[in-house]
Every structure is written in structure tokens, then in C-alpha cells.
Image (cartoon, rainbow, N blue to C red; front, side, top):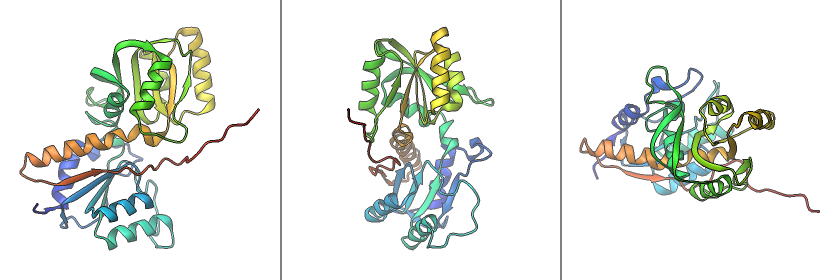
Amino acid sequence: MSPTALSAIIAELESTYDPAWAEPWDAVGLVCGDPAQPVRKIMFAVDPVASVADEAVSWGADLVVTHHPLFLRGTTTVAADTAKGALVHRLIKNDIALHTAHTNADVADPGVSDALARAVGLTGALRPLQPSSGDPARGLGRVGHLAAPTTLGDFAARAARGLPRTAWGLRVAGDPSRPVRTVAVSGGAGDSLLGTAAAAGVDVFLTADLRHHPAGEFMESGGFAGGPALIDAAHWATEWPWLGQAAGILTSGLAAKGINVETRVSATVTDAWTTTAQCED
């Protein structure tokens, strides 16, 4: 397998996940790495953290593509006595580049929420929950249908089986016997799309990082208007399915240009929560 310059790999990634689609506050693109360096092995992960770096070094990766940025806000140091600085030093010492596709991957077609929708069982055509102004095929979240109607309880169990295991699984708000056929999903934090999901006429909205007050008020008001049930999953779990999708799109696009690379989807669980505890009677 002959090596290809990092710059060519990045160009292919950005043809699918255009940096111009990222939110103004976001930080996407190449974080570290020489654009001229050769790349043979590419690893995909959700988070740029020490355990992912361990996996990348062990596997011999030349490039790590993460969904979450390493530096979302400005910094004045990458000193090795800080966690993020130490990560940068380790990657550079091992000739491993780091690239981020974040909100530009969220709104892509296909993007993060397409992969999530398929993982939890949605079939057929999908449409954005909140379409992008410049291209209605792109946007945040996805709305689709199940192959056959089911109940909220059964759908939640199906979704749990389709997503990677985390310490606390899924939280469900709504009657478990409620019929479910039309579903909205959004990878990552979905508080901002609660109203949009209600207006979309779906039976359930599956997302992550739902807070007590917005979720509680949503369920109270929805109870009067027939609004959707809610399923709250771990942030990491809702974005992990995108890794395999992105790896497949990249390898196919490069292969069409006569470029072959080896890819790996990180199996490292980087969800922040590691265990749960329940009060005993």
C-alpha cells in the first residue's frame, strides 16, 4: 500500500464535510500534522482523548479523525503538563495527525444523524429535522419511519441494542405502551431541537444531553397537545455510529481516485460516565 499525502486525505474528507458548513463558534479541520506527511492508516473516534491516542499509537495510525474538537475555545499553551497539551505532544512524537469534523459532519448528507437513524432502526427515506437554509437536503437531525409500528418500550429496547453500550443506557419519558412509527433523532445534544421535534409531528424524539427543566416542561406541554415522547441517550453513543459511515465514505471516495488506505473505527468508550448507582430501599 503506497502512502498518500495527508493533504489529499484532508481534501477528500472536506469534500464530504465542508468546513464552511460548520457553526461560527466551532473549530474544525486539521489540528496537528504536516500536510505533506504520508498516510496509510486512519482511525476514526468521537473524542480526542488520551485513551484514543493510546489506541492510535498501538495500531500505528498516521491520522486520527475525531468528531469532537480538541480545542473548541482559544488556548495560549500546548505545554505537556496539561492534558490537551500532552495529547498534542504525544500525537506529534508518534507522527499522528489529528483532524476534526464536528458541526460540518452534523449537517452533512449523509451525516451524524443519518447514521444514528439507521442504528436505531429507521428505514427508507430520511429528511432533516431542521433543514439548512442553503440546502434543504442537509441540516440538523433526521426524521424517518420504522418498518412497522411498535410501542415506545419496544422501540427504546431496539434503540438500546443498536447503540454502543454505556453505563446508563437510555432514559425514556412517556408511556411505554404508546404507539411509535415516526421518529426524529439528533446526534449529540438535542435540547435546542425540542420545539422543532414537537412541530414535526413525530411519535418520539431520540437525542442526548436532555436537561431536567427543558425535558420536563416539554413533556408537560406535550401532554396537552399530543407531543412526542423522549429518549435520552449518552452523547458519545449517539455519535459513535457516524464513525463507520465516515470511514466508509472516505475509503470509497479515495478508492475511486486510485488511493487505498486502511481505516479503523475506535472501540474505545469515551463516554464521560463510567458507572451508575441506585438508592436501595
